[in-house]
Length: 376
Image (cartoon, rainbow, N blue to C red; front, side, top):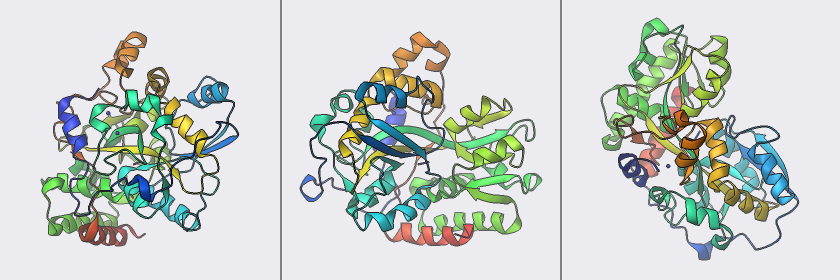
């Protein structure tokens, strides 16, 4: 994993980030959390990030930030799955240590949980002028962080099907993941908030309206697919290794990855399922114990310059959270400005739902069942 000028229909979905949860939203209480102290922007900055999530090279965003600030950046692509990463980080955070990481990027639902546990620093808004000016209005008050006190969106995207169209032509439904003719050539995600809601959709059930019994029925369907060998494995971002090799023909995966894979494997395509997709957002956070929170905060503001964000969007092809990017890309490359993966239309996402927070007792029940199903 693990968020958008989007059209009004998508904005409505984005505002509804708390759908499917019985857990109260994070309150973003500035008085109860440490705030990034003012200080010089210098030194070393370690960023923990997902793969294929930034423009690379000597002219890329990291190099430009280093040139502009003098900060030395270590950019580590170490996040494969939200739960896996949090499991590695949590013992450190409990001791007030971030493992030298000053900036992390996780899904909003996990960030809300981390904030409640006291693991995140809150931002000094006076140091984020670009964010205040350029964050899309639809993203300013999500249920997971109503005041944007501890999260700033990095990118948004869609969970759908990534397909080897030469090996599995005609695939266009979530239900194809369960078709016996693709047995052993399918992967699904270890991210419960992707795999189970998408399975609900394949069953004709709206995740936003699903009962606990329906959620658990979807988990049972996933478990049956795992036990039968229909699903060869459950993955985080590592499905990107299996599709080019042909080990996987159909992956439940994330929109921007397909574009990156297609550069070297033209037969790989992102397919919007007939049943719809999941819309999601990953955001930037500064953990407690961060050795250089000032540089982390400066980096957050740097990537909210529309020109910088356009460079990122041009390479990653995820949904950008920054205003003005579409106009820039329209001049650079008109085709990109029309790209449904960066600027999805209401028609394209008509059947999509927003990734649920899914907290409280419902979340616990579904999470426990899903972990048993995938063998984690």
